[in-house]
Image (cartoon, rainbow, N blue to C red; front, side):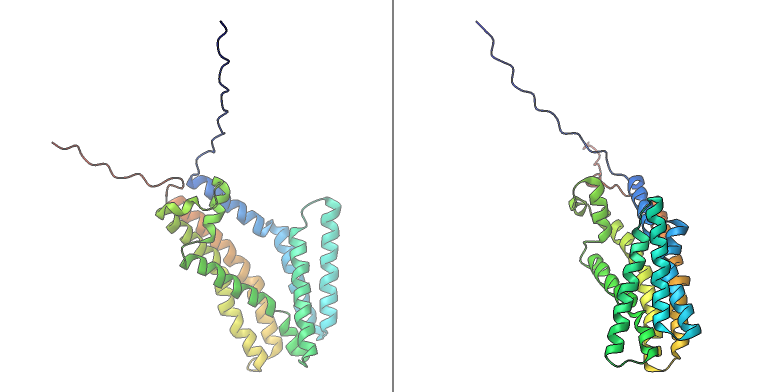
Length: 253
C-alpha cells in the first residue's frame, strides 16, 4: 500500500526588516542628497537665476539674460551627458527657465513694461512655493503628513503608519520642517515682488533682492530644515513599526 504524497509546502514570504528611526533617518539623508546634489547640483540650480539677474541689472536686456541663461545651462547639460551622470539638476534648471520665459512672454503680451517682465521671471517660483506650502501644510492639518508616505515606501505599505499615533505625530513634525523653507521664502519674496510690481520699490532693487533671497537664503534654509529633521529623528526614538507597546499591569495580589 503506497503512502499518500506529501502535501506541498508553501514558501514563506520573505519578511521585511523592521523600520526603525535609524532607517528613516537614512531616508531623510537620501532625500537631502537627492534634493541638492552636492556643490555641483547647487551650482547648476543657481547659475540660470544668477546670470539672468546680473545681465538684466547691467544691460536691461531681457532677451540677452534669458538666452545666456539657457546657453549656460545647455553647456552644463552637455557636460553631464558626456560624463554619463544624472541630468536631474540641469533639467530642473531648464524647466525653471522655460516657465520663467513663459511668464515673461505673457507679461509682454499683456502690455507689461520691461520692469514688469523682469519681475515676471521670478513669479513662478513664488507661486510654486506658495502652492507647495499650502498643499503640504494641509496634509499635516488633516493628519496625512507627506513624510508618512516616505516611511511607507520603506515599509512596503503606504498607509500602515497611520495606525500608530506616535508615528503620525513624528511624521507631522518632520513634514512641517520640510515645508518651512518654502513658507519662509514666500513670506519674504512675495512682498518684495508686489512692491516692485506696484512701483513702491525700484524694479532693479526688487530683482536683486528676489535673486538674493532665492540663492542666498533659500538653500541655507533647506539645509537647516533637513538638519533639523535628522536631529529630531535622533532625539525622538519613536517606534516606527506596529503599535506602541501597551503598559503592563502588576499581577493582582
